[in-house]
Length: 169
Image 1: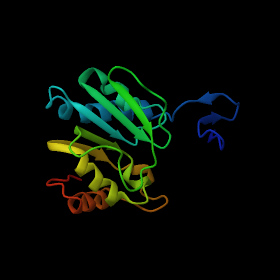
Image 2: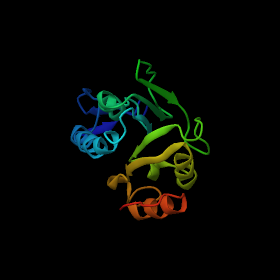
Image 3: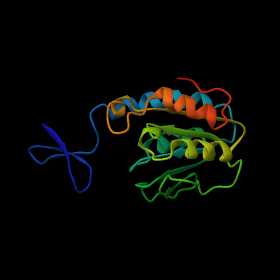
Image 4: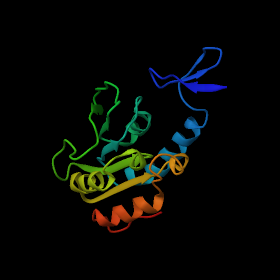
């Protein structure tokens, strides 16, 4: 039986052995990078923003060979600074800390359903996305029945409200 540690949020087995991530996460990560790669390849010197990069910024690190530079933002972002990558610890509420037209591709994987103001963040993503840029994301299906009841349809509707021309379910 597994439980999340109330102090650090990491997964623990009853025996006390630490599990760094849920069992399905490595599979989901591979699926996410496969989904993102076609967008990254459209831009020869791609600048990537990963909104809600998580505590290990794994999608950002997986994308490193395919991008010129990348930034991950999250309230629990790790301290990361390299020639291509950096992370910023920030609360995703009203404004993203970037200039207009800063990124070619913006990813937000399983993030919208956790935000208090998802429409505002989608508007901010539109602002920092270069024209013609790409954004890709998804709603974590495991959270649909949880707190808030946010769905993929909600994300699609708000994407349209934020000014995205095409927003797929």
